[in-house]
Image (tube, rainbow, N blue to C red; front, side, top):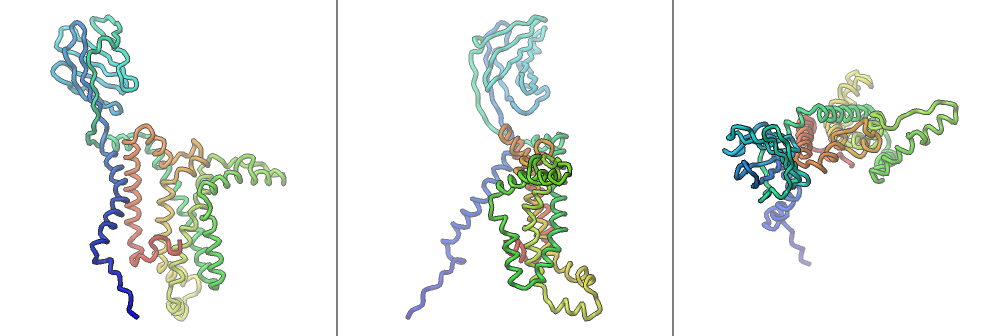
Length: 373
């Protein structure tokens, strides 16, 4: 009976298209976000006005979202743009002529002319030609706007704080749990591992709304407190509620990598520590803890990264008092995708930096991906 031929995909030319497709599929959206973060949209207008003592043509570039301070359009005039109004000033006349052009939905609505202190309105009949071309130009204004905006920085720092506190709590709860779990018999270990992973099989939003039902003002917890004569607690729309649900959602991501590391520890090393006179706590802190650092690093990465980008939890549990960077990106992106992309790139850089520093603790890569998860 002849054997089936072995398939060697490593050297096969047919394997490369799949690799290229996978890379493009994964990287292309990220590159698009980076592109948007480094660009702004240009609205190019060629405006011809038919009015006495008016420059024959005013040609310039308008950035509808940014702010330009006295840039020169051409030899015929200079414009000032404050985000809503374009003021075209002709300095070639003895008396300055100022044309304020108002835009609504990308079109000229009316023109006001200031001439010799007199104000009168011109209508669209005076606009003989209006041509609009769109394009892009490269700039770092999106990043400057983020770091110079106190509101954006406040949301950013709040997100880091919430993610940090959630990660620390998950570590304080996850390490002892994983250690006790690794000491149990295999049957109980498998059963409890499934119990820890069981909530993850439920939809993420359902878990969040379940917690809202528990801790809201008329929820189950307050109902129980009032039934025993205790005052109801206002837990909803606070940072505490956001951190509570984040710990609940991401705790398995901390437990399983640490557990995966602890069950692989060489028992002879632990026995040698006891033979040399170390007690249980000395062995735990001088032997077990250092050897479990790869799992700890993996757990921190898998907890901190999704915590800082999660927006559904803060939106449902925190309300307007605990807005995080993920929620802010969702809000901003609908109106200004360039600024929203810059915020996303900043978060990606923060994630890459944190993963870079923590990846050195997991040299073998055994815990990348969370072990059993």
